[in-house]
Length: 389
Ligand SMILES: Cc1ncc(COP(=O)(O)O)c(C=O)c1O
Image (tube, rainbow, N blue to C red):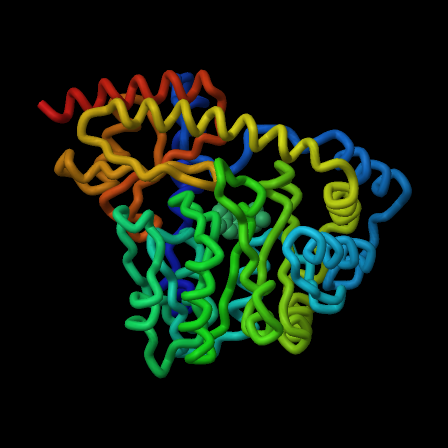
């Protein structure tokens, strides 16, 4: 028996595949330097774990409303008002099993079969696959290193067709680390609204931001923009809660309602006691976030200085998230060949840029120890010197 046509169109996640290969080699006793995983290497802060443990001990182990517990939806609404300048009511917020789930729900709730979803590349690798799973078509817009991998309004305009339904914006971006300014966002939004597109704004890395870069929430621009925007956020990256599987979206009431219906027939509620941990994450001290970002900032400097000292590599300075995307095209290999050789010969795991729609680059996550960065970059340097000959 054959799998369904849509299922056969979907590629498995290459980041997870590289991560598993690196882990398997490690298990065989190989000394691998891994830059594959897109998750903070810190543990979840204690006060968050404690809140979930307490909920568990108190028997908070039953189904909750499928859209999340009222206490959490209220806390998210308050957070979005205070930090993002957006006025959502709790019934416009749906809590899901990770921001990944929220993005997928958002696409399912808005896109019809055959609609086009505009995605600037390099992109987070799940967006095109999610569009395909919803029966829609990804429409990829290539950005350039010269423009810090940001889509221009002209590029967006040129990519719009009668089938366009949605544009996905992700700032700070995985994998480029680019952060759009308020003016850059406003120019894109103007084009998107002229053609009545939905905007999926994935803001999962909003707190992981450096130097003078500022996070800007699209939905804060106006009521009309808010009605066109689905804001996605979550707990994985800001609070080191990847395994908890908790994210959320905020949208116009009719879209939030549609997402709730979809969720109620697919996963139902995200894990009950995990939601109590998320309430603590939002309501208690944010010092843990600032501490993590400070460490990421030091690692960013370390990895960038290391990469910039390697002949043949060019790297855009990331302003957010915890990835670098060096251009390796001067070595005369595509990104998969480069990563395969790098892992086999230098025991360094990185993700080929092709997974993100750009075959000239590789992605390194610096959500790992300074020792790993120092050793890995030194190996990469030797490897690059060897293959240049
Ligand atoms: C851009 C982006 N959006 C969403 C997600 C999903 O996050 P979560 O772990 O909350 O599902 C990720 C995770 O890597 C991501 O990089």
